[in-house]
Length: 431
Image (cartoon, rainbow, N blue to C red; front, side, top):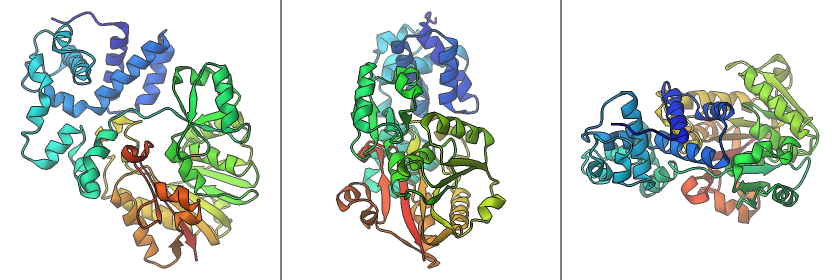
């Protein structure tokens, strides 16, 4: 027997089916659903939280239902997954779960942790406990040692709703007051001097402050990556992998809207979104140019050796952003680390050629894995064409000490330590 579900739960299941069929990006599907249905802010919050739990904890939920009497597929299986997510997150008890699906041993499901601890293979045990694919679990265990469990647990949490004040139009303090006047409560972030965390984000995009271009949604770690580029006013800067332009817009603000800021990406759709965002935020020094995966546009080649700063926010597996994109862990290609580091190194080397002598290449990823981060940089440094700039020379010594690796050369941000997404960055100066 299956109970009649609330509208919120029906929307969750509809989204679950759409997203899990190929593990497409959840954010766009959620936005589409919220346009189709009339929902209160509270309903939207409930839907997002429940869906995040199902996507992030899918492997653990599926393991919990094994041997419980739950069916293997169909609508009843989907509702059982939903009920398991609510049960294991403490939102309902076993009796409440039985109101969703009767023919399941919910007491057995509730004691899933005892069964996980009996898994003999340590990688499989860690992966099941933290709901990760085996390959990612193994790499996190190898790379992070006794911090691996805390990191993996943090990657399953919900990320804060972070904003960057647009310094082309306002300041952080003024923005906090402007948002408060619209009953949106925000507080300053710890590391980024431009960052805020919004407590009640449901109305953020319908606010006058957003329409007026006073802020952009951007993780605090991403803001810090843009900041260490340190683009001077009036300089020539390239964002080689701009995407929809989060860091590009931050660079424009740091440049005071002056100089030349070229933004490249292989996707014209992403560049069009960047252009739209740039118009709204008055980032008038940006030019968005489509590029090919393995060849710079002619006008970029003509400027080879003349860029003061080049940012390479390299394509990566996205392990540091799993809090925001929990579904991405289930894509087969996400952690193909036999291919990604080759692409990352090639892109960084081609980008270094564009830097002026004495100019800087900033290599960054939203990855927490050594193979995509330090290993790539160490191979580039071995050629002797560039040198790593200590982060304390880019930021103040006090600020750098909180966000860098022990060697002082790498920005390493981790969600269980810094509360940001996982980010890695290094500043390389061309000799």
